[in-house]
Image (tube, rainbow over all chains, first blue to last red; front, side, top):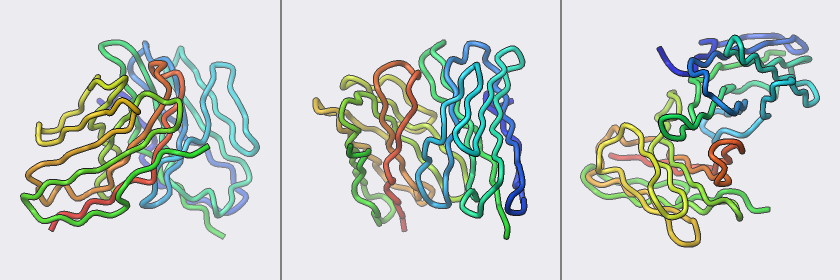
Length: 111
Length: 114
């Protein structure tokens, strides 16, 4: 089992739809959580950090449930430009510091 | 603020040759990470440098090596290139805070081995 697992996707949604991505992590000692987006053949770019209280940035809302070891990203009013791969990222400092990337979930937003 | 810069953007080598990739972190960042991303696949962790020392390496053979310089820039060297080394090599940097701050990536070096 992978330490960070994401919905396999791809997600195909129409413009204006709300889409949710889920991510689970297996190590309870995980300490920090992030969502990145990666466009085709480009570098990953930080979308937002994820805090225990949940956080929102415009159309994007991230939530963390430490008890269930679960992270989510909600995108409201999807735009064509939201089409990308969304990566869940977890860090921990047990057994050596590590940053672990999920395999990503591909999103296609269609007109 | 200048971001993470990588050079060259593209690199074409033949099998058996050596490749050297370079990375300059964001000013103030002391940690540098290297990742390999083959076409259509996820990021594979290669190496982590902090304060000039190798702190961790991924599951790659010893022909993948690197170093970090006193100004925190870094080099990745790949010896005895193989066809399957063709990939996008991404460098990222962060503050030395053991994961509390996120990684910031450069544009990558696309290595093609023929």
